[in-house]
Structures are given as structure tokens and as C-alpha cells.
Length: 410
Image (cartoon, rainbow, N blue to C red):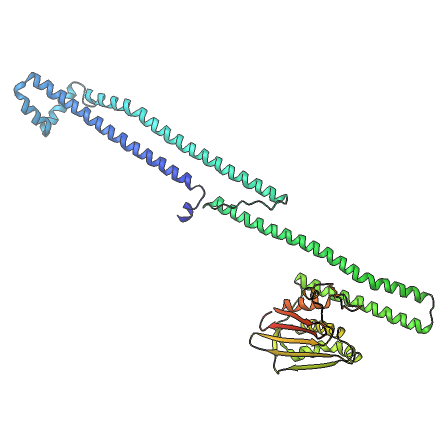
């Protein structure tokens, strides 16, 4: 019943009920008029009988009135016999007069009432059909404009009813389609920028490799040839690392990277992250100091986390001078595990701080071989595990990266 009164066409039902009530009231009034007419006709018939008898027998007036008011069975039987002798047993003149008058007066009124009721129902149905057709036509136009890419329309309706609910649902779909279209446009722009950045980053080592290849074809001295080959290997390694990092970022962006949910010991994570960095640290004669409490851990993916932490420590190694110091402090509490990687390098310029984690961003102190993707990859990995990474830096003092991974979140 509740759903019935929530429909858009409840006005139609209310109007039909109102019209039915009006027809019922008119019918009752006609019935009352018919009853009054019959009573008046019977009254006139009795008055005619009494008047006729009293004219003939004035002295019997009181007796006639009493007998007609409460006729006994014998009088009724005698009356029927007398009417029968004159052929009026089945339908007397009085009855014919009453019936003919009643039919004449009520037939046209009844037919008019039925006609009005049906005309009212037809009018209501026609108006309802026109209203529905107008609503459907409006929604069809709305959908065609959405199909054409016009998402600026607002079809919301604050009314109650099926069409209002449908309009509001269509508006919600329109909003989702608009957001999806905007997101697709942003993705296209980001993809275009990404392709441009990749082309730019790969073009430099490829150009260098082409020059080195040309130099090698000129049959240089052995010492120069070995130097050229070493530089070719370095450029090739740079391209390989760049492609691998971009593939990892693509997996993170598309949500296809599978992260494990397992206990990760923070000290083991640090050791895993430092394995590929031992040689660069030794070459630059840097001091590596690790401090932390036992049992620090979080729930996450060891391999992906090690990849991210390696990029952070690698950034510190590259921006710390020979003989500098790199310090790693780790701890854990009830909410999160924390790893702080600090160096005593030259620091980061204040204007570079807001963009340090952006892809392909290279600050004023960026190394010659840096492409600005390592820190972006590290942030994406920790973000995907419910973590966060921030940076603090002071020129001439050093830089500190603060990594937090909330426990039990993956």
C-alpha cells in the first residue's frame, strides 16, 4: 500500500476515487429522489381512492381512512378479486402511472450520470497518458544528450513517485559517467605526458649509445675502446633500470601489482634493501649506521617494501658526499612501524620539496644519471600498503625521509 501512494500516478488514482465517490453520491441522491417520487405517487393514489369513496359515501369517511391505513387480509383479498374482474390484477392503472413517470424522470438522469462518469474516467486516462508521454519524451531527450557527451544536464526531481526516483537515479548515473569521462581524460593526459617523459628519458642514453657505437666503429685505441664499452654498459643498465621501474609503476597504477599480507620484520627488510647498495657505499666510503629496537614489524609485502626502501637509501647515497654518513633508525608502536633514513648531504632546495615525489622531477641537485623516478616508485609502493613517506631537509645539514607503514593494513 505504501508503494501505491509513492507512485507518480497517485493523482490519477485519487481523481478516479473522487469521481467514483461523486457518482456514488449522485446515485444515492437519485435513489432518494426515486423513493420520494414513489411515496408521493402512492400518497396521491390513496388520496384519490379516499376522495372518490368519500364523495359517494360521506358518512363512511372515518371508516374508509381507518381501513386503508391498516387493511386486513380479507380486504386485501377482496381488492385483488375486484381488480382481477376488471383486468387490473397484474398491473393497475396506478402502477402503470408510477412506473411510467419514474422511468421518464430517472432514465435520462441515469444515462447522463453513466455518461459523465465514463467521460470523466476517459479524460483522466487521457491526461495521465499525456503526462506520462511528456515525461518519457523528456527522459529520452535527456538520454540522447548524455549519449552525445553532454554531462552538464541536471534532471533531478525532488518529488515523490516512480518518475522522480527514475530521474534521480539517471542523474546519479550521469554524475558517474561524467566522473568516468573526466577520469579517462585525465588518464589520457597522464599517459601522453608519461610517454613524452619516457621518450625524453630514453632518448638521452640512446643518443649517447649511438655516439659511443660510432666511436667504436673507428677502431679506437684499446684503452679508449674499453672505456667506450664500459660507458655503453652503463647506459644500457640505465635503460634497463628505467624500463623495469616504469613497468612496476604501471602495475601499481593499474592495480595489478599483487601485494602479500604477511609479517615483515623491519630489520630483515633493511638488510634486504641494503644488499644491492653495499658496493656504492664502499666506493664512496660512506658510514652506514643502523639503530632500532628488536621485534619491530608490520604487515605487508617484504619484496615490494625492500624495493621502495632501496630507492630511498639510494637517493641518500647519491646526494651524500664521499665519507658522509647515512643513518637508518627504525621502531614500531601499536599503530605503525617507522623507518627514518637520514643523510648529512647538501639537502634539498625549498622549491623542490613539494615535487620531490613527482615522477621524472629532477631538482637542482639531481645527479647526472638521475631520472626522477626512484622516490616516486617508493611512495607509490608504500601508499599501496597503507603507508606514507615524507621528507624533511635543511640546506647544508642533510635530508631525512620518514617512512610509516600502519600495522595490519594491506
